[in-house]
Amino acid sequence: MEETEGVEETEGVEGVEVVEGVEVVEGMEETVEGVEGMEGVVEFAKKIPGFRDLSQHDQVSLLKAGTFEVLVVRFASLFDVKDRTVTFLGGRKYGVEALRAMGAGDLLASMLDFSQKLSSLGLSEEEMSLFTAVVLVSADRSGIENVNSVEALQETLIRALRSLISKNHPPSDTAVFTKLLLKLPDLHTLNNMHSEQLLAFKVHS
Image 1 (spheres, rainbow, N blue to C red):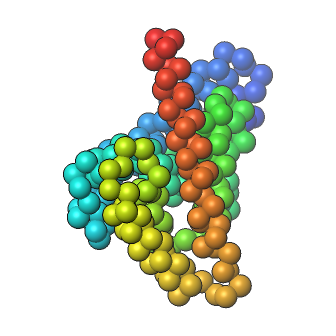
Image 2 (cartoon, one colour):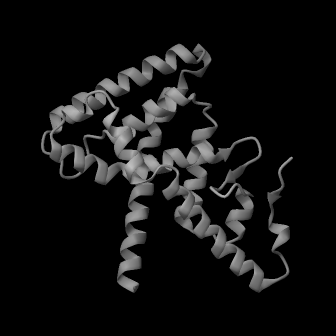
């Protein structure tokens, strides 16, 4: 079994603990950015039926506003619900509590919580992809010109997601679809936290 990094490995040596924490936070940021990257999100968007029928302006607006949320959803695939660990791009595993103890900030801690809850729903790859499309195509993004067209596509994707969930999950799991839709406001909150963090960084740089 692959060894998981634990808190005990850094306890008792303050300097090591701080350095380890910085490395972990940087590693998480690199992992989120590297799960797909901007180009990967653009390629994904092109494959969403109906996305390229939207105006060029609205396509760009959706991508600008929703890319971080898509990356957060993709980051959840690196989370192991059973072991409560996250696997970084380098292959190293870290326990959730260890990450928090080693300096994961509010944003990263919230991302871990989101990943845990999303992963616990046990979505298939197809369901996850369709949910990601719903996340990206959100009519309430700022700067959208043709709201009706975006809303129509969003509703189509939501209906398809509901149908897929109903087909793949037993009647006792009917709450899965509702829980997924409730994740959308959570993603908006994470996106706002990310924007505030970037703004704070620019102000203090």
